[in-house]
Length: 128
Length: 206
Image (cartoon, rainbow over all chains, first blue to last red; front, side, top):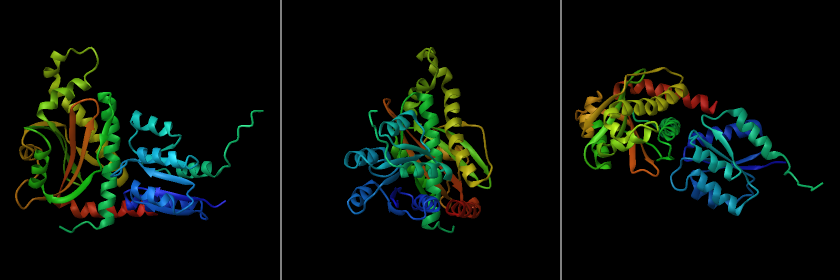
């Protein structure tokens, strides 16, 4: 099934890089971009977004704050946060949001694995 | 000096962003607290102007740990704090069990160690991403105004001396400790840097 991914990063070059990786791995998918968290919030209502890949260090709300807000309004979205900042507080914040930690510089195969995991049907708890 | 186009500036900012994020991780482990890092800026400006901006960020004199940078790019990397918070930083990085009264004696050594880890963490990340080797000098502690510290670190500060200034601010949470990481790259290495950035952009976008 085709998915829509939003890439949130204040660096245009980084958005271009992530867009390129996504479309190499999943050519049928749609990629939209936001240059900061405010743009992410605006675009949430405009498209049926399934996956968000969010930079951590941005002007305005940082990636963790944006992901937290996103979780509140759209708990079903798959989220990855990309950062070279591997401080314990950042990594634990990412885990607490049930988001994926994606270290910079980006590893294309790791992004590919995240996209594949986000493409799997949701796990069901059957209670059996 | 040929100005950077928007994508080159973006790439350089991003390289610095990744470098300082790695450095903040190392600093955070050393001080045992979260380190918040600002969004970096990249400007081509006289180094003296950048020094004035740095002075305005801190009360009183600065303490700066500086390392020279040489290779394809030339300049200096600096870690700056208010001199008044220098001992707080030293106490934060000393191992448990060292009495606070011993901190002044260990100050110089501890500052050099912090500077070395933070600045090399940043520079080595940038060098790897540009696929170059950057040589760094030994850390040296400078004190005074930012202009004094720039001059002491070998940064040209004359009225005609423009440099590429990369600047990021950070705050150590839970302690009254703020600092700046500054890279001042000499204009003479600018053409080489533009070529390197072009190569980096091409690799990222394939």
